[in-house]
Length: 488
Image (cartoon, rainbow, N blue to C red):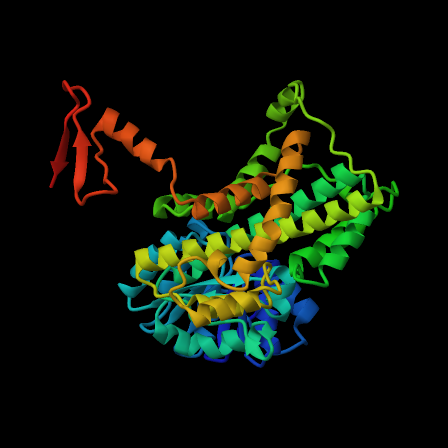
């Protein structure tokens, strides 16, 4: 077992935690000219990194945490890449005990933003800076250029910004990293990013289901259709990798790999957090919610087995003629595009609500800009989202901005046809259906919420407002004649 004893103040930045993501981030930093200190609680991982990649650039390995901290130049910057939760708190305490005032601890994991707010306060009380930075792009992104969403203090970004911008992905020469806002802002937007990712993946899967059910198409044939779509307005990283997954053939059986994968989708929690936070903020993120619930439903084998005994009263979805098949494919493409717009629009609604609630002042145009490369949800229409928010930073509804308003109007008939066909055929497309319901809800001139307010007032004296006069009102439902009172 090797022992690594580095020189003091010999590293520009450090990475604690050398799993795949941590090791790749350290390699990215070192490759971009930063002497990078590396440490792992299990020494074997440090040895592995140095054995496999030690000659790539300047690494400063340590066998002890004390040496790791001592190897960092002041003000020290230590990135934590460990499991979210108690492990992050434990590492923070270990680092804080060895650091000086003004040093910076950076959590680049997927931590819950409220934990980040708590940790930033804890660090500030000890004279330290704490930065919660969302990092998107997976293993390859961490190595070759992720999208980075740091929160914390502006002073922290002065130190971190040049390094993050150097290692981030780029789009038209613009680094995909920018300061997001105070304390938990970075992890908040990364959480919502992941929620949008859930919805985006689910609607692609629903389009796949429709094409397979309606056309009887093979995974390879659907891959060809998706590859064509990826050349136009649906161009995105997720469409690109979906084509690769659908084309993969199992070497042992010769069957499409997707047919051999158990149809139970797991999750690590960020989608759930996005939905829970949206409920707290009273923001309807129905696309993200349905995508998250769909993963839950897929992972309940006993319920699904019991449900298969139920009569569906459905008519098979069979598209036969060449003309009808071509029309159906185009309808599904348009329905997919419309549903993706809803998911992104709802995600930005939640970001706006969170920014107001926590006083972050997030620049949504800048955020869309740094999602154009490096991250998992990078897509062609993020250019349009960027321009929409640059034109109107206070845009109340992305879906109503051009070019999305026009495109959604053009896609609505297709979305209605697809949802209706799937409902009659018993094909589950929860995000497609909820996207249409959401669109109809926000465009309605009057909603049944008036009746709900009447019900609430009846059983709980919750009061209501009227359309014809100012004030707050309550009907005395149990009194003779049911008189109405105006409350102050």
